[in-house]
Image (cartoon, rainbow, N blue to C red):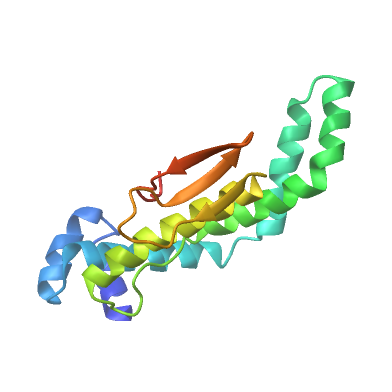
Length: 163
């Protein structure tokens, strides 16, 4: 790993050098880019105080509030928002969740990614206050059911992305 990082450092951390380095080390260019990206996100995240960074975000929000009503509403949610910001910053600074660190077969990994998307959707729906259930039949035309005002909505989940 250190030799790969040194090789990119020697190329002044230019993304255009990844292809050449991948060829030299008999690696796929996309995998090497993922490796670099993950490593560099963690390098940067390890020196950042996320508590301090979330506090700076809170201060900036407070500066933008122009009325006493908004400031009162903000005071009500401030602690919760600070926790959310800190968790979000952690995910952002570590580039989300690592993918396929166990070299799982790509077909299995694709199925796992689909299952994960479904679990994340259902969890978010529940946390948003909806009564939501997963459908456990893989051949079903839908993946989840949401009860919205006593109407059952069938949901097909296509996946998640970083965008």
